Structure formats: C-alpha cells, structure tokens
Amino acid sequence: MALLDGKTALVTGVANRWSIATGIARALHAHGARLCFIYQGDRVRDEVEKLAAELGGSRCYPCDVRSDEALAELGKAVRRDYGSLDALVHSIAYTNKEDLQGKVYTTSRDGFSLALDISSYSLIALSNALVDVLNDEASIVAVTYFGSTSIVPNYNLAGIAKAALESIVRYLAYDLGARGIRVNAISAGPISTASSRQVRGFRHILEMVASGAPLRRNVTPEDVGNAAVFLTSDLSRAVTAGVHFVDSGFNAMGIFPSAPAPAE
Image (cartoon, rainbow, N blue to C red):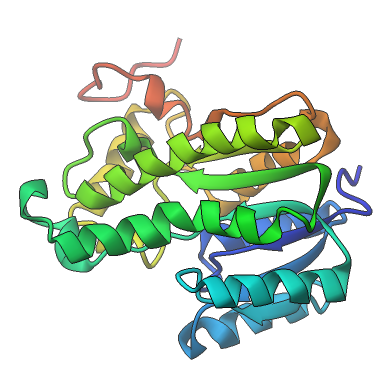
C-alpha cells in the first residue's frame, strides 16, 4: 500500500548512500512520493544527483542554508517546479571535529555559532523560506539523536545543537498547527554514517545498543525511513510536536546489563 501517492517532499542532508536522509528518501519514494533535494557544494552534488536520478529523476537545488538569499531562491525554485510541498525532511547537521572532542567548556564561540546555525537554526530558516510553499496539513520531519537530552561522551556540542533542534520542533509545531502542518522529530539510534564516525568511541556506542537495547540490535536508515513515511503520511494527521524514538528502545534503558539477558 502506497501511503504517499500524490505527495511531494523536499529532502535535505543526503551526503552519500549511507546517509540517514538517503534511507528516508528511498522509503518516501517507495510509498509513492515525488521528491526533490537540496545540496551544498560540489563535494556532495554528484551523490545527491545520482540518488535523485535513481528515484524518479528528482530535481536537485544548490542551497547554502546559512544564506538567506539562497533560501529565498530555493523557495522560488520549488514553487516554480513543483507548485507546492507536502513534506519537508530536515536531516542537516554539522559540528567542527574539534568540538566533538575534549571538554564542552573549551568550545569556541565561532564553533558554537556554526553548529547551532547549521544544525538547528536551519530548520527555522527552511520553514520560513518554504512556509508559503507548504500545503495545509503538510508535514515537517527533523532528524535528532538521544544525545540531545542525555550525556553521550564525545557527542558534546552536537548534542547541544540537537537539544535546540528539538525545542524548535515544538515551537514550530505550535506556530504552524493552525494550518494543520505537523512538525515532528525522529530520534534515530546510532547509525554508521560519515558524520557519526567523527564521534570518538562511536563503535562502542554501536556495541552498547546492539547488546543492551530491548530489541538487541542497531537500527538502519531504512528503519528511520519507515518512521518518516508514517510521519509524512495522512496516518499521522493528529501527531505533532513530538520526538519519536527509532532506536530499538535504547532510550528507555536506565541500567545496562553487562551481558544480554537470557531468552525466556
């Protein structure tokens, strides 16, 4: 059953075939959505265009989310080419590598501003640029992580930026709710991507989830994509302002067993 027939979605944050955004895009396409993408810089352009061609020849737009002029141009281009949008997927994050190590109190002012601008404020900026393009009862979905509300060593500034992102989700949900537009976040479990591997000790995080989470496994981009299908479909018309965990239940654990519990 195709849940997104007739819907158009803009997907951000594709860097390569392992990206969470790629898993989301594939799932949306599999359920009938028409897609478009943005990318920043030639470094990822080829990967984004390759995926777009694979998923129905979707359009790709260059866009630096730190530029108000670029965002305004994006809004015009999407209206010209697609008329309107039914969904916006925000899967953008960036933190300087040095701010994922050491102590939080050594974070530079410039590094903090950059991380919050790209990882958090970009959701506000994109929503503002596309607010007149989004249909009533559209859906905005952001990707976040457990480190926003709990201590994940070495996640540091990235976790602070995700905390801001989740707060933005709630306030946008209120501001856009009168139009029936839902705003939600998916808190994805750790997935081996180019950005996550910058976090020192990431392999240990994967091992902890695989052994200690209730489902005893890590999640995949496809798992996150399936949740995004629900949140962008009409099945979620009364779901907004929430952070929805797709992490095999890891977020619910308080004390972690030293070894997997025996099967009943």
